[in-house]
Image (cartoon, rainbow, N blue to C red; front, side, top):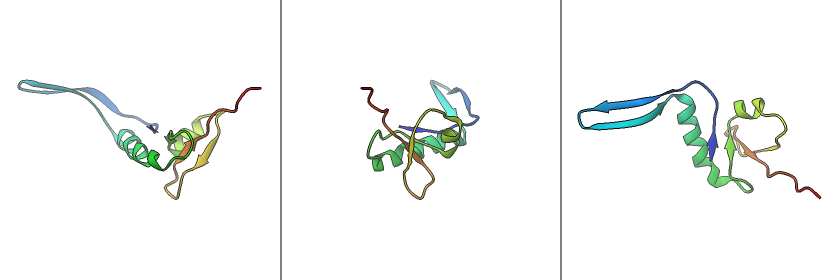
Length: 79
């Protein structure tokens, strides 16, 4: 799973006989790239951008690699 944050355009694109729902924007492209990096994950395989890490409190992250992406750490077990 790859997660990014930002503005996107969401809607239906249509032509004669065909209609598709789509999301367009840099965050969608980045999220797709992060999803590809999730194969390198060792714990949850949920990869977030630096922007998501900054906006998220109460979660723990591990740097994935030189790409600047972070893997979400699994929650601590409650005793």
